[in-house]
Image 1 (cartoon, rainbow, N blue to C red):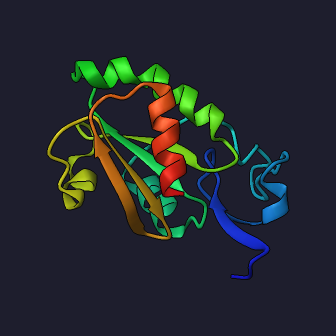
Image 2 (image 1 turned 90 degrees about the vertical axis):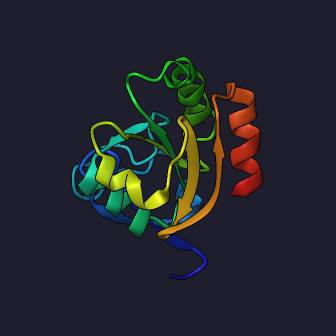
Image 3 (image 1 turned 180 degrees about the horizontal axis):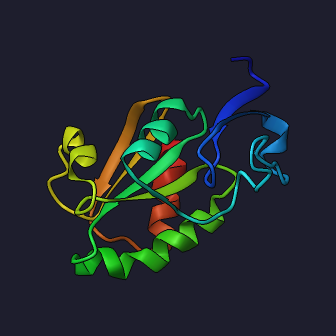
Length: 145
């Protein structure tokens, strides 16, 4: 990797793209499916796509570990989506349903939900648990990335 390019995994087809850093503020599209790479919307991940986004992306990925039965998770969802839009050129936001994909979440020892974690190139940079408003999510992510 040079200082001018990075790998970003497409939120639509989950293919890895190399993108110039100066394109992050613009409308960069996937070379495979031609959809926008930076949508500003959380991406729903499954076991396969989780590994691709977490392991291959040099662009920070913020993952919300949640479950459909979790009241605080459902209450935080709109704030998480708002933070994703605010930080669309700084991080990709994603969600992993721990109920549907427990084996994917298990290695991360998620003890309470919602838990958010920031990853880059397969490494966890930080995590925080509990439902937060959008402004606090944005401040926390900016302090990490």
